[in-house]
Image 1 (cartoon, helix red, strand yellow):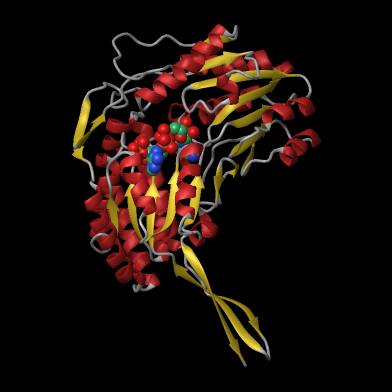
Image 2: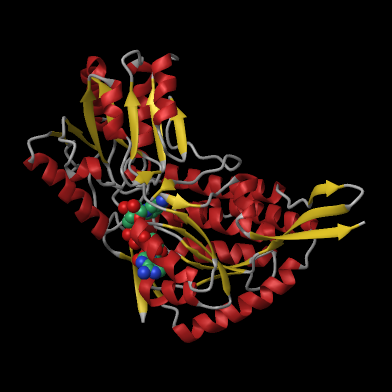
Length: 453
Ligand code: NAP
């Protein structure tokens, strides 16, 4: 069986690749186990150098990687180039980390230290929104810790990950990172179930994440889950709209809104509502929508048909509910999954575009009069990935920061993720953490050595 990878800007087949069978999966995990035994015995310096070489080669292949990302994911070339740059940057950052032994007691009675050991073969399951970057987020801390990885990319965006694995194995050892191709149920679940896989790192939807966590619990595999979000941004009465409008647009619509930590619900004090809505509408109208490979294009298609239909349905529901929908006209002749950056003004709180994650190019803008009252809407019942407050320094701003319950709270910014800053969701938005030293520790098991004196 083969998988047809579709270019979302044209709906044409970009590449066809064979699916991995379950028999192949077993031999892949077997070789991953062998690779783990070799890789874990390398010194930290050897692992560091290999990862720096990988980062160099990602940069050397930047044009090819960016072109693959545009062809299967759809984003404009400039954003794909940022993704490739981020992949190299995250690789270098992880190369710089190390697993120090921690001495926790050195007394007359005992000497006690905590060692960190690599967890073993890691299963990584990645989504289609930032496919190269998220694969790097999963793989590089695993490699630094001494693990091997079997990665299952989203069925709609596997090609960039296959290229990444080639680069990694060239600079490390054979089979250190292997890719399995196929549907979630067909190959993702058997991978997570495999008894020789010791950890799952998953980025994707909350229902699938919870389902896989239950499977992983069967033999107590370690789990890191980065799941959905419905991040609120709150714009206060004292905000300077000229200063923040562009940033709010960018952090809401980056990657056509298909980013876990995008700003997805915008609550604006009524005194600033019209000014900000107009500024955002002007920026949205100025976007050049089209094929990400075409010069000048700033806004690409939604990545796949399912997501396109889901976002369209939310926009239609918003229109039917009486909300004002500002939808720039698409250029003639486009044949892909295109939706222009769309604003929904004055939506009711309970419609899907507000209370569900859109994961696409549509932003609801909701006016409020009283910041205390708006917090009861802004704090989501299930999701708590990120949140933000926008305004000049004041007590009210600090109060909003103290009330938001998300894994990250930004002030006058949103969606900023950096390799050294831990990132993860609370409530149904995730379990565990990525990035920084804490992210590295997720790929280890603790061993306490307690020597009596
Ligand atoms: P998804 O269905 O959870 O898919 C994510 C990954 O999981 C893909 O590789 C998918 O494979 C795989 N998968 C699906 N079902 C599986 C199963 N039963 N067992 C093992 N693997 C399975 O998410 P999606 O449909 O791509 O995106 C929809 C939602 O996911 C978004 O609306 C958003 O909520 C969330 N999301 C979050 C992030 C984030 O960074 N936090 C990123 C992307 C998406 P296939 O591609 O083969 O189905």
